[in-house]
Length: 430
Image (cartoon, rainbow, N blue to C red; front, side, top):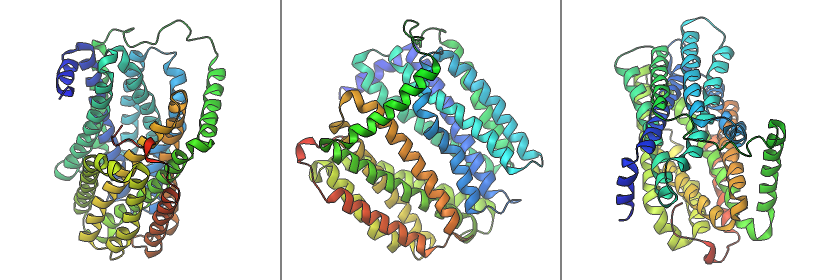
């Protein structure tokens, strides 16, 4: 395969390796921090977590991605990106340490959430900067391979960081604060690794950067998002708009069921904190396995059914299997449901990405994907908020599961009601 030599060449590039190291350490720290936050909110023995508290934790983790993400580029095109990585990670060291100290101290929960929100807000700038800096260390011929390698490696690093945090929490340190301090050490390592990169290597170019004021640039970004939405409303783009709407609803379902599983692991299926954490780790691992299966079968499925047809099939399968497996609220069937959710959610997302890339004009594509990112994360947070209103303490809610199944039916009708000719559907993952 041509990808393998390109991959080997990439790893021989010193500047690419240094940038990749910054990403791996930073996202590993993110994984540790996210698990530390989740275990403190949900599994701390001194806390009896409610669905509302879980929803608050999810908002802390995801809202910065939704609200700050589209506007981060305005500043990343003005600040030296290497310095963003250095000072951003150093700032996260301090903020994470403060968050850990707040666990030790008898402070109000809102203060803890504010500190954690600051950590994840800085994270949006670092991740966006890593993507923006990549073309500065890789030539155009290998940029596609680099774009595939770097985010995937970062996701694996975050997963490994989360696994490390769970292992430490269960097997050694009986302290969520200690887990957060481990994350702070990884953020420090990421900051120090940036010192091997020349200050000006990662850009941006100086000329043209300050043609607009910050206010004008932010306004232009907001107008760009609106123009992206208008672009989606054009008749020829409506299959992409339907796919985006369907994916947003499926992400909503995934969020609601995630909170359900968290509550089941914490209260219904376990008698100790360690047992609940272990069950949550199994559920997350099985959902991840479903993501992997989706990556394997979706190229074939989109060739067979078309991208829109595959989204419809995923939603239809979920509409049947979620209540069948979920309504008993038993551990085994629900773990099987975690695999199903991983397959259908990621399979639909890959297909949605494909439809959007195929139907959206290139000059609008970035703006549309920014809208996509906002919808994707707000849907998850909104699902957590709704779950907080309807879930009992043990997570067993028949109305919620049936409601989610009806949403999946609505997605199947939405995406299957009208079919675009197969010419626009490509059978590959982006």
